[in-house]
Amino acid sequence: MKFCVFGAGAVGGFVGGMVARTDAEVSLVARGDHLAAIRMNGLRVITPDGEFTVSPPATDDPAELGVQDIVFLSAKAHALTEAAAAMKPLIGPDTVVVSAQNGIPFWYFHAHGGPRDGHILQTVDPGGRIAGAIGCERVIGCVITSSNAVIEPGVVRNIGNRVFAIGEPDGSNSDRMRNLSALLADAGLDAPVHETIRSEVWVKMWGNVSFSPMAALAMARLGPLVERDDLRRLGISIMEEVQSVGEALGVVFHQKIADRIEGTRKVSGHKTSILQDLEAGRPMEVDGITGAVVELGRLTGVETPMIDLVYALLRQRAREAGLYPEIGFDPLAYVT
Image (cartoon, rainbow, N blue to C red; front, side):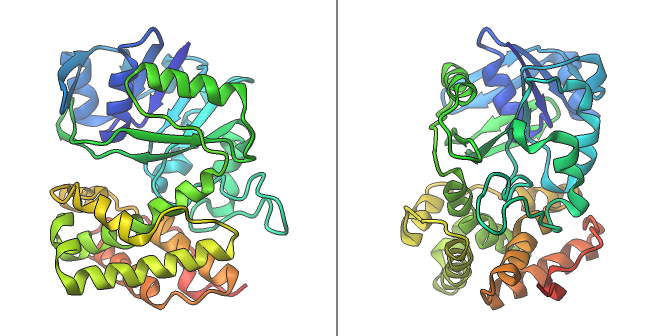
């Protein structure tokens, strides 16, 4: 089985490294110093269980790799338009694309049913270019609960958690999904199959829209955000708004906010990915996560005053740092 990781950074590098120890034929698409280090020394993966090095083919030109059976797409949301065009040489008639982004995925309303079926979110996929290039019919959704970081070029550290929940957008229990789950499990990853993968998206959105942007605004790790009463209350207010939007879309939350906060405490020393990007001078994920919930709030008629405020501040923080990828759409001004 040919398994390509497109975007072999922190999460993608961890997944690629783990799967490379199975019988799968793994390849990596990466860039810059990280790619150069992988080519020279292999990919070093550090986990709580130990460390290892693998040396799969790595490139910045997908055309070198040819058609794949599975493409694990872990590029950041703001880079997906470019990535979707670049990954075309990897895509054949039966290729499965595992969509593993933070935030609301570009395929969210594919096979959704109801009046919004097929709707395109402009904060996530302006003009529908990502869905058009990849094809939502080949997508399996993936919601990641795993803390990883590139600690130096060619070296990825996992500090705990390795859950990669997967699900078909239409809720079916397909052969391709079961095969993917088995492969990830063989690699030592927890890959539970969910009939309602969108519910898993929204549970993760609790943290993505609250403590993650708060971390970037406060330049803080997760610990102070959940331990300080004032900051925790702010996070809870945002999470309640997130839940209201999700429920307006028919999502059932099978977890309580308090339980999610307790889970965050367990990784209190972690720097969120958006804070890592800010500190490293990389483009920040603003619209595909926080901005998408603002847009969905307008779409469903749910007021989101705290999310609106955090989004406006986060967007300006990114602009001041020169790290905001402009999308030509302002969800704060969106009128349905």
